[in-house]
Image 1 (cartoon, rainbow, N blue to C red):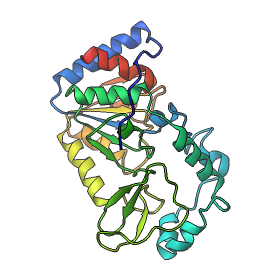
Image 2 (cartoon, rainbow, N blue to C red; image 1 turned 90 degrees about the vertical axis):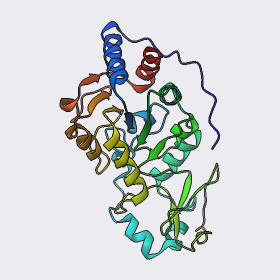
Image 3 (spheres, one colour; image 1 turned 90 degrees about the horizontal axis):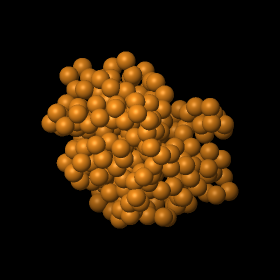
Image 4 (cartoon, one colour; image 1 turned 135 degrees about the horizontal axis):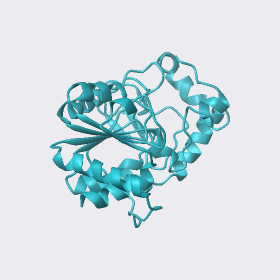
Length: 270
């Protein structure tokens, strides 16, 4: 997927206390040998993508989807795809699809890509399915919950980019192994793909600094990686507008959005 051209990174300035905290985070990253970022729904919200949970979340407004979605898919894949034609698709899926189609990376995404290019950030583990990190130019990216713009074979793990296409009918068997194909996004009741979980765990095991950005740190198993990193001695840095259950574990916690904080952090590092 080609990267989107980065805009000038000039978001609203931070206050003096926030700038001082940015300097503290930059100092931690300079002393670290291997910094990894984990991003959550807060990153997507800044690009206009509604969250699933919370006061204005999709599931709050439309109701939580069935917890056995993956089981339903496996029982009747063709029927599952047919129920998701425009005439029958769930309202929350329609709203999410429209938001994903129009969303663009924000300054925070581009700042992370800048940190990676500068060698200050080794990888990003994202819980988001929007593909915006890749569009911003991030290379060492682990999409732990999948990517809405891709298909994945359940047998061999082969992934195929859809581009702007929204499939309305069941895709054929995998070209590589003949296995069953679904959206890459992880459904309720579906385990995180083994290759993805192994890659995320390997990055966490190497990290001596982890940036937790825009995540409530409540969704397992992804959030558990942060506790694993902290228990292994990694310094945890939080960037989030509000306190979370992770805050008490953090070396530094900055109250800010990613779109404001990350460009400032990139400037402090470079």
